[in-house]
Image 1 (tube, rainbow, N blue to C red):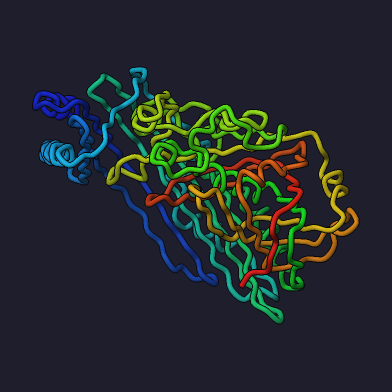
Image 2: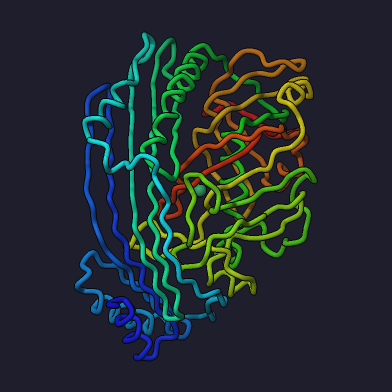
Length: 449
Ligand SMILES: [Zn+2]
C-alpha cells in the first residue's frame, strides 16, 4: 500500500515511469583460514530503491530506512529531471506484460535454520593433507525476499535462497601452487553436500599442479573441460550479448543477429528459468524470466535484454535486469549460461588431437567485449599427444578472438556439467554455467608471465 502511494505521488508530479524494489536480506558469511575462523558475519537488512524516468532522464535513490521512502522518491524525481536536462540521447522502456505474482523458491533444508556451530563444523570437516600448506574455506548464504511494484501495475513478490561453498587450497613442492573449486546454487543447506566431492577434486588438482611441467606454446588445438567452457561462454561470449553493451556500441555482436558467429554445432543459451546459481523467476524490473537462445546452431539469435536496452534495440525485454541489492539500479546481467551438448564421447575428442592441450577450470583472465578478444588462464592442464592425455602442465594461458574461436569449435561431447561463479560488472551477480567438453581446433597458447 505504501509503495503504491510513493509511486502515485511521483507519477502525479509528472514522471513518465516509476518503480520501487523493496528487499529483505538474511545473510551468513563464514571463512576459515588454516582451520581458524577468519570472518563470521550473520545478519539481516531491509531497504528499497525508487527508480524514476522523467522524459529521457533517470533518477535512482536507494535507502535502508523504509520510513524515508517518500524522501527517496522525491530525490529520485529531482535527479531524473536534472539528468533529463543534460541527456544527449532519447531513452525509453520497451513494452512489457503486466505481472502480478508471488513466487517462493524452496530450500529443502532451510539454511537459516542450521546453527552457526554446524556451519563451522562443516568447514572444519574438510581435512588437510601432507603437501597442503594453507586452506581457505568459505561458506555463504543469502535469502532475499523482494517486492517489485511499477507505475504500470506490475506487482511481483519473490523469495530466493542461495548457498555457496568455496575452497581454496595451497600446496608446496618445488613451487607453490593453488587450486580452488566452488559449489553453489539456488536452494538450501542441502547444496553443501556437493562440497565434499569438490574437496577431492581440489586435492587431486593440487597434486597434479605440484608435479606439472612448463607448457608448450604456439597455435595449438585445445580441449576445454565443462567448467572452463562454461567460463568461456560467459566471459568471452555472454558479456558481448548483454543488451546494454550492444546498444551502447560496446559489443562485437552489434548488428549481427541472423549472422553466423559460431560453428553449426554450437548452441548457447542463457536461462534464468532452470535450476542453478543464476536462477530467478522474475527480473528486477518485474519482467518474467525467459530462456534466451543466444546462438542457435551457429547463428546469432538473441541478446540478453532489460526494458531500456530492448527499447533502444527495438526488441522485447527477456528479463535481463538484475541488481546486486536495493542500493543499486539493475543492469543487464547473465543468469545460467549454457552450451548445449553435442554427440561425441570424451575419448573421441581426445583422439582428434595429435599435439595439444587439455585445460580444466579457469583462474581468471581478461576479455574485451567490444573488440571480441579474450585471454584466459587455465587452473589445471595436460598435454595431449597422439590422441592421449599425457603429463600435467602448469601456468597455461590462451588467447584469441571470440568469434573466430567459436567458429573453430570442432567437437562437443554429449555430457554437460554445472558450475557456479560470481560475475562482476560494477555489481556482483550469482551466475551458473553448464557446458560439455569442447575441442577448439586452434588457439594461441602460451605460458603465463
Ligand atoms: Zn561476468
